[in-house]
Image (cartoon, rainbow, N blue to C red; front, side, top):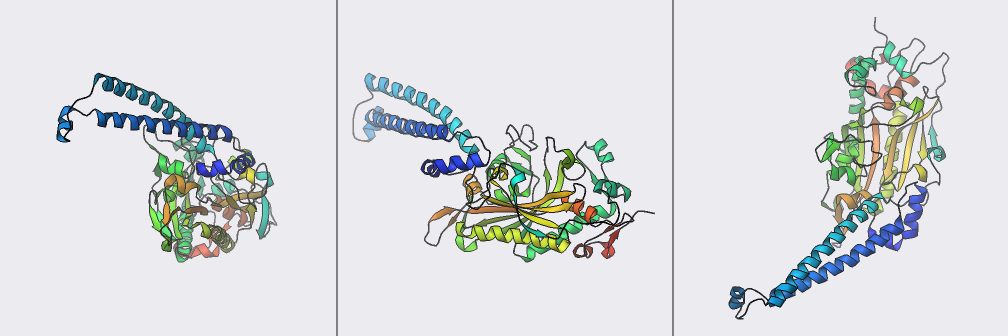
Length: 432
């Protein structure tokens, strides 16, 4: 979340950011509630001071005797004390009501926006800034990954629908092995670049969910909440990695801190997505390796570029055609200051489709999670946090199956993954 002091001093900038992100939040009402709560807090503090003063003036006789004074509370003091107690209770109740409304509104205020982010209403106005490779062309009629997966006996949606429901799947045979090969490849690459590898929990408490910008109790939530528990299934390891250093104060000399977390991810994926809802593109459960960085504010721009370059390196090595998108204001989301997506060419869609994203969230998440660092002069400041998908193990298999299919229905496995497969497997072929 944003600092309320920053909002007071930059209300027009914050209001404009919310408008451009298509997020409805009444900044004027927030500032009105802020003023009311501050006024009430002053009033409550004054009443408490009066009560304390009265208590000191009318201490019980035993305490006064110990202090070398005589006497006991007078009827007038007792009456004044009761009235102060009642007045404090009334004001505290008012404060509690206003504080709740204030906190709800403050939670809705999005991060501000980098000056170079393109202005746009939705994802149709994202801007392509780079392309690596071109859409795959075939000398035969290509098949989608659903057909390929069934024909090669590596992907089973039908049985998963019976066992678990729609939106789930089984990876089988070579595709199951390929998932583990992709995990090993990704973690080996990130570890070599200084990222500490993690395998994180798949459940997080609500403070970590909300701290990273995921609200399991929201009106349009996509999170699986655990009934009766202060927890939910995570949608990304961003949540568990971000929460890992909650309430910590770091040393600046240790920054940036780079993490790479493998986890399962769970999303309701409600809504009408049309063709995008078919197959592996939108599912309720998948695995992913996520990058997460904690850094000083002056490091975050460079770290954002580093994460983007790592993503580009991964997909260039895989040989998947992709383009880099600068995400426009209307598609940016609440926590992000700036965001890039990588979109792979997906023959099933006959279009580009998102396979990674990377966001600079500045101190928006760190303020909620209370993650700080101590500067060289001893000043304590909030860190900046960044996150980026290294590899999601549903959309990348789509890209591999569809882009590397051969006329006989077999699939050529990217060379960088072959050494992680039994016998250096090079091709997925139809079972005899």
